[in-house]
Length: 269
Image 1: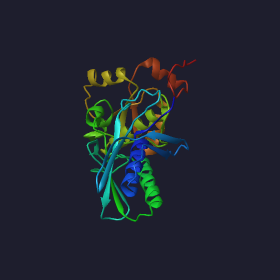
Image 2 (image 1 turned 60 degrees about the horizontal axis):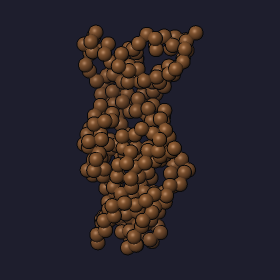
Image 3 (image 1 turned 180 degrees about the vertical axis):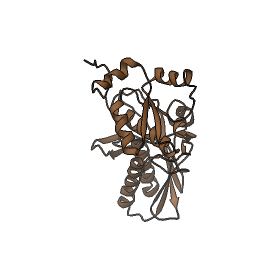
Image 4 (image 1 turned 90 degrees about the vertical axis):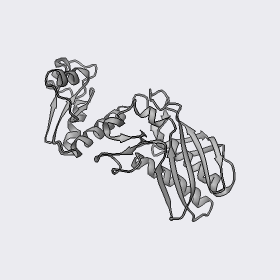
């Protein structure tokens, strides 16, 4: 079963809050078109209406994907803003970027480019519907975000204070390989931006333990690549890394010598 990303939840909540602020009418369900082309119809929760701001939430549904954000409420508060257009920021439970190399600059809320565009387009749709030229400010928050972030890669990536608002298609596919590859890219990008031109790549705990126990390496220039050896090499090329050193179980890495670039449940001849 498919689910939807935190970015879709944030955009839908922002659209509903903007509608209630600009029209004065309550919205119990909101429709959202995702970049993947799938249209969502989502229940609006935790509605709070004031004269100059409206806040509401969408409950995150990960479908059959084992996502730590399953069932989490993603809030958007939309308020009137002096500057024109739509301003977007993160509130409680949304992380802040502290290292270069990620989708957003240092100091910005960890709301990635596609969710930012989805939020902006959703709110602009409402502004057009309401024939409004008012500037609006959107603040996305996730009350459980700081605790949830400890179960994610965010601490390794230098994202502090909460989760990231992610998603490139708006839709979560069960056990998404693309999500894993995107994580490898993000981690290696941070390593490259930290001044490293060569990094370690470890499929799992064997490699990590070897680096620490045998070489005493406790640094930050190692990325976990799981079975995605080929993709990790491609990412290193895209980022301009000068070298990779793989450390892991010989039974897994020997498959690479046979030309197998994804080492999951395959046998080398």
